[in-house]
Amino acid sequence: MHQYTLTSADGQVESYTDHKRFWWMLSLVNPLIPLLGVGGHLISANELWLVVPLLLMFVLGPLFDWLFGEDENNPPEVLVPQLEEDRYYRILTYLTVPLHYITFLCVAVWVGTQSLSWWGFLTLTVAVGFADGFAINTGHELGHKRTKIETWLAKIVLAVPAYGHFWIEHNRGHHRDVATPQDPASSRMGESIYKFARREIPGAFHRAWMIEHERLCRKGVPVWSLHNEVLQSYLITIVLQVGLIAAFGWIMLPFLLLHNFFSWWVLTSANYIEHYGLLRATQADGKFERCQPHHSWNANHKYSNLLLFHLQRHSDHHANPTRRYQSLRHFEDLPSLPSGYYGMYIIAYFPSLWFKMLDPRLLALPHINGDLSKINIDPEAKQHIYAKYG
Image 1 (cartoon, one colour):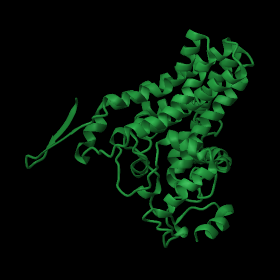
Image 2 (cartoon, one colour; image 1 turned 180 degrees about the horizontal axis):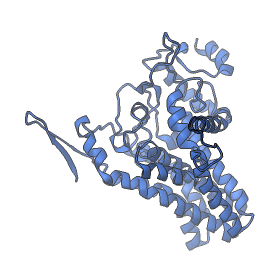
Image 3 (spheres, helix red, strand yellow; image 1 turned 135 degrees about the horizontal axis):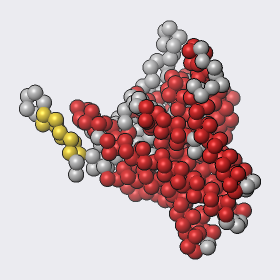
Image 4 (tube, helix red, strand yellow; image 1 turned 90 degrees about the vertical axis):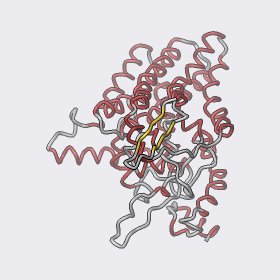
C-alpha cells in the first residue's frame, strides 16, 4: 500500500495511507455500466438485460451506500501536496474520458442495428443518458484544473452529453453566485426539481454564453469563432451526433434527443440537491459573504463517492475549487445528506417526499436554527413555508 510521509524540522514524522487507492478504479467502471445491459442482451437475446444498468445505478447504488457506510477520513494537510502530485489519481480521470465515448458509441451502434422493443429502446437510452450525465462530473473534475491537457479533456468529455458550456458556466458563474437567489444552479426551499429544471437548464446556458461573450468582447475577438470556448465543445458534439445520424439513419434522432436530455437531467439532479435552500448572508456593503463550507450539502458515502470522484464532499470543493478529488476533506457539523447522490436523486424526483425529508434538516442546521430569513426560499412558496414553519 502506497504511503506518503513527511519529516518535519523537529524530526516528527507524518504519514498517510489512502486505503481507497485501489478502490478509486471504480470510477472507471461508472461510464461502462450501460454495457452490462448490451452484453447481457447480446448473449441471451433477452431485453430484460437492458434494465440492469438502471437497477445497478438506482437500486444497488443506494443499497451499496447504505451497506458500505460513510468515510470521514481526511489526509493530513501537510501531505496534501504529495497526494495531489501523485499522477495515479489524475490518470484515472484521463482514462474516464475515452470510456464515456466507448460506451456512448457502443450503445448507439446497438440501438441503430438491433430491432428493440419500444421499452427496450427507451430503457437502454435512458441508462446511457444517465451514464453520460456523469461525464459532466468528469468534466467538472478536469475543468477545475489549470493544466492545458485537463482543460481540453474537459471540453472533449463534455461533448458526449452535449453540454459544452458547463465548465464556463460552472467555474465562472456557479462558483461566483452559488447559494444566492441570483444563481440558476442553486435550488430554493419549496422549489421542486421539476420547477428548478425550468430555471436551471436555460439559465445556466444563458449565463455561460454571456460570460464568454463578455470575455471575447473585451479581447476584441468575434463571438462566433473558434476562440469561443462554448462552441469548441459543441463542434465536437455536432460532428459526433451528425455522424451517428448519417451512419444509422433517423432512429438516431429520438435516441440522441433522449440521451442528451437525460444527461442534462443528471446535472440538474446534482445541482438541485447540492445547495438546496442554503443562502449566503448579505454583508453591510450589499455583497454576499464569501462561500463557506456550510453553503453546500455533503455526503460521505463510500460507494458513490468512489464512482463520482468525491463530488459529494462538495463543501471543500467550493472552498477550494482546484483541490483534486483525492484530497477533498470531510468537515464536522455541515449540511449532510442521508444518502449518496444515487439515493437522493430518487427522493428528489418525488417532491413531497423530498420536502418532508430535507426541509426539517435544513431548518435544523446550526447556522440557520429555524430562522427562515437565513434560507434561500422559492418566492412562490414563501407564504406557504412561513405559514408552516414561521
